[in-house]
Amino acid sequence: MSVSVRPVRSRRDRATFVDLPVRLHRGTPGFVAPLRMQELETLDPNRNPFFEHARIEAFLAERNGRPVGRVALIDDDLHNRHHDDDLAFFGFFDAADGEVAKALLDTVERRARDLGRSLLRGPANPSMNDSSGLQIDAFDRPPFVMMPWNPPDYPAWVEDHGFAKVKDMYAWLARSEEGIPERFVRLAERARTRSGAVVRELRMDRFDEELATVQRIYTEAWEKNWGQVPYTDAEFAHLAESLKMILDPRIALFLELDGEVVGVCLGLPDLNQVLAKFHGRLIPFGIVPLLRRRAIVDQLRLAILGVLPRWRNRGLELVLIHEVWTRGEVAGYRKAELSWILEDNEPINKGLRALGARTYKTYRMYQKPL
Image 1 (cartoon, rainbow, N blue to C red):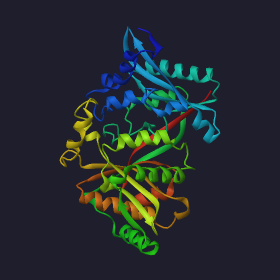
Image 2 (image 1 turned 30 degrees about the vertical axis):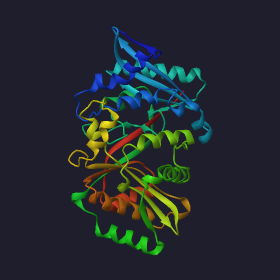
Image 3 (image 1 turned 180 degrees about the vertical axis):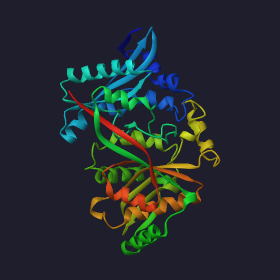
Image 4 (image 1 turned 90 degrees about the vertical axis):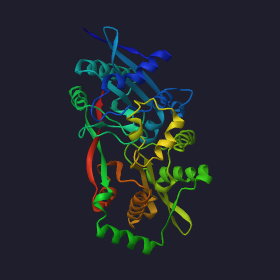
């Protein structure tokens, strides 16, 4: 039976779009359903400030009246201005089989051409500040919080459609049981002594002020990163509000020199250890008590690690990594994912290798000329 693709128009369509991954992948090793309420909010122009500078066109694929796939076309003015690009993104890609994948990719490719774009890149859900890339290995390993997952077939289906790799991003894994190499500790301590660096925890009683500092460091430190677009103030405030519920200040660290914050390290408890049990439908205020149960949440994801450009090449990144490792162990975390890191970000990749971490997942961004 043939596959038809139609736009998402109604609230019911949007719910079907959000619920489709559970329909397709529930019970598949490695799959963890995203938090449903957050996915609905992401796609809502009235609640997501991303829509202030971008548009998302969502599509459902159906076969014999049953939903069998989804995709979105994302047209982001801010990205194109910031990078002097002329591209559209695709994202939120899921398909039951290769025929469905082809129909969906045909649709977003046609829409990108209609918009006059010269390139189509993805997946981004909906931007590089969110979950992005197709996982190309370790499919049976569940994703850490705010990271994507896909089945093994997806990369081949995208490549069969004429897309090629444009950039790989690594996820590194470190385990407390393996310890920290002595050489890494010596380098970190030497950098701390020479610089006079002081590391402190995030102050929850000054949350808004602290997150404004994170935004400032993030904007400047990541300015030249491939694909990176600065958060708008509204976007960062929206992100901060969602993170406030799950942040653990013991692994959210600031590095100061002479009282000035010049680096940040933001670890997040791996909420997916909880969500895996609830198929994305956990009531928000039920999260916090579960996060406090060490037996459930003993993993963290290091989502942000950055030092201002003028203070780089002094080993300060090593100081932050050492601090979050040792403080995380004291707090009861036994495993950490450091993700994602661009394949050509050699300073950070080199530091993680010295730590004894290993790359265990690769996420790939694809691109196709139109």
